[in-house]
Image 1 (cartoon, rainbow, N blue to C red):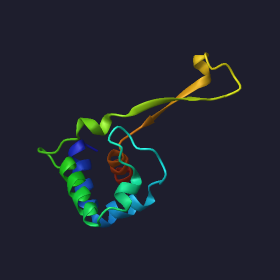
Image 2 (cartoon, rainbow, N blue to C red):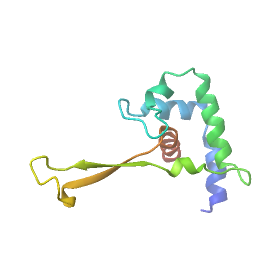
Image 3 (cartoon, one colour):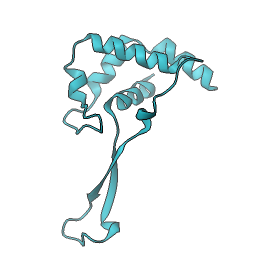
Image 4 (cartoon, helix red, strand yellow):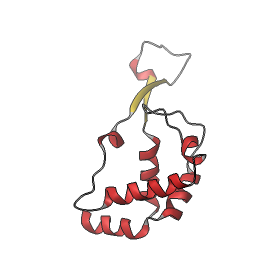
Length: 114
């Protein structure tokens, strides 16, 4: 299926109810990325924010005007120690996690759910 067909399907299926459901399904208690926004900021914000987010995501999927902001692809990479009793100077004793912006995480959840 071409991108245009995916975008058209996305536009047809994404509405305020889908955005709200995906927002409520997000895990709480996670740290924020560079923008310092967390899922709690979105969950406990004014309900109109869901309408604005729905419009944003639909605009991003709209062709030819839509685009995905560069910030959606940026993340903060943090090294985590695998074994605290192991050698902390050994690079193999670390694994990396990426903290993505919460608004792009929500977009991914919506895209996966439709």
